[in-house]
Image (tube, rainbow, N blue to C red; front, side, top):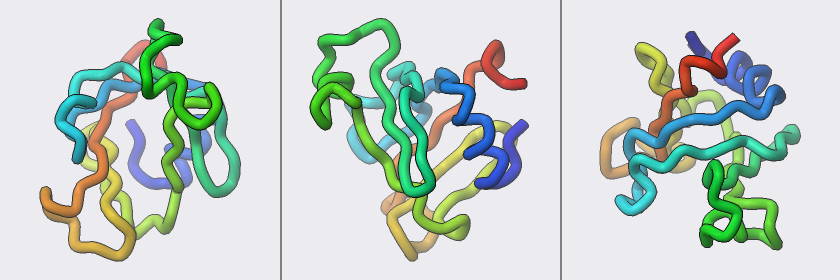
Length: 107
């Protein structure tokens, strides 16, 4: 189970899939995303199995990008990873996305 940002970054190097549990864009809730690129400042994801989805086609086909920001912008609770707008309180109104790695993907 992921307990901090460093663990999440290491896990994302394996290009796992995850399910979005909550998102500031409600239409993204329930999407299964696949991590396709990771670097020191961000990661890119596509909608798993849907190469023509608008989120998969974003950023020239690299998928949606999310910046890592600081560990203080993240929370980890019972397998749910949540990221909040930079420097904001960890409340629903400031949530960017909550997700869980799919069980078959967790090492």
